[in-house]
Image (cartoon, rainbow, N blue to C red):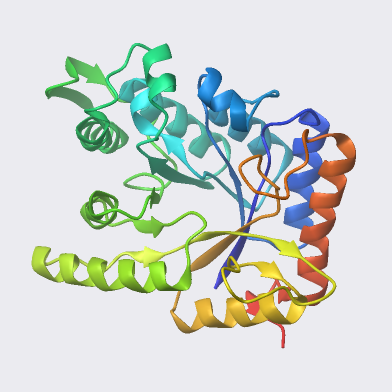
Amino acid sequence: MRFGVSIPNYGAAVSAESLTAWAQGSERLGFDLAMVTDHLAQPEDVRRAYPEDFYECFAALTFLAAVTSTIELGTSVAVIPLRNPVHTARALATIDQLSGGRVIVGIGVGGNEQEYRALDLGFVRRGAMTDEYLRVITRLWGGGNVSFAGEFVTFDDLLATPTPSRPGGPPIWVGGSARPALRRAIAHHGTWHPVFPTLDGIDAGARQAAEMADAAGKPVPGIAPRIRLSISATPVPETGRPLGVGSVEQITTDLHALAARDVEAIVFDPVHHPFFPDAPPSRTGDVDEREWGTIEHLAAEIIDATKGTVRG
């Protein structure tokens, strides 16, 4: 099992120095993955959750590639319809080449209508746009001269450069828990990447994915959830407790439960997001340090990231 860290590319404390500290620290502790998240516009609805600086995810990944050497770098998740797919394909292929093949492409459809409106994009058709954009992106990753005629994208005789470092392109992780997300993961030989799921949700999604993959005659997608990380000195009540929240013993139990389900990776998110009940009003430097301290605590007492194992 591989372990990753969700690196905050947003907040009052975000800077070149903070990104470097989180990425290099994660690499030093033996984590396999460093993931950033995505909002391309910050209208009122987005500002309710993220009212401070928010670095563009592909630019942040480029920076992280330059300050690290071994850790894989990805998005959790990039909202695919917000960008022209020709741009997305080239940006990610460029980062993959510059990083030596270390990119993971976590994708989603997004759920904020105001953000779509700000970019003059249709919100209702975002699922269909995502499907078509993924076809464009993966075709361009194959290189050569490419033409495409679709409902949302049409172009003729584009030279697809650069090609990604990894043949066929970077791995695709599909966020979301609805049936279309599972279908996309299966269609693109990808990984299902539920964000803040419950164990019951993972079990239900895994069963549905297995049925859908069998019907399509394709491999069952792997599972790589992103879960919260909040370590308390004493146990918290089990009723309604999210995965990754509680005492060392409770979180260890969570991780053993995920390992028993053969998840291929776990991405830990220590940020107390504004939509959580215990969130601070601002991601200041002090908050940033406390959240990073939670990652160090995780590595010291709960997991051995260098071996991909859970302690206890």
